[in-house]
Figure 1 (cartoon, one colour):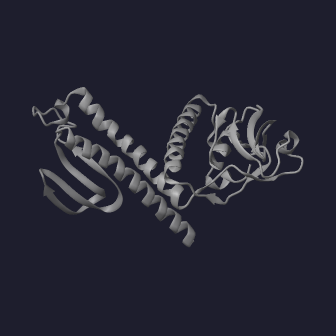
Figure 2 (cartoon, one colour):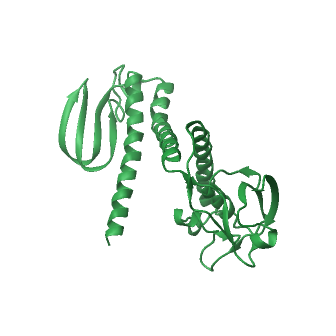
Length: 258
């Protein structure tokens, strides 16, 4: 019970931070470009407190989930050079784009900090199941996966997503590093139960996190953000075309066992 409540609270907090950063991107960009902002709200629901500064109304709302930005002239035709509807297209585009851009920048910085302070599991194989596709291919415990189907991977989560997204009964090509040498193996993933459409090859990754230095964390963070964006776009596209099932979407627990 306590764990469920805690998970819900953490989820609310995370969503709130994401939305808040998103709206802050809109707000700061609009102010920088000379677009008038009527109100910047922190949270949602009834107002608890409000104050005005620099021509902008700031409000604190009852529910601490996200926030919002209300632009002057956003939903109405106002003849004012500071109104949103009177701005040049490039200014409106930048203001709108600043929201997701702020989220990406925030994720980039947070990932750098996490890689340095907490670390992340690398795709080092801990066990290989007897009789599995991985064992048949020649994969051994201690091998570190460096690529899946020609795409470089740095973390266990990346390897997991690239392997399990293969639900078309196609062979997966693994590049692994063993004793200073790079070897290539082909394994055919299989479904591990009747309901779950994710496919596995019969390995588990070492869950122990590995920390990284500052400059390495920058490079890895950039690589990870690009990877996640590509995977999200692929999943969204697959959901519309039918190539991706919602049953194949799983949580972070599954990143250790394949």
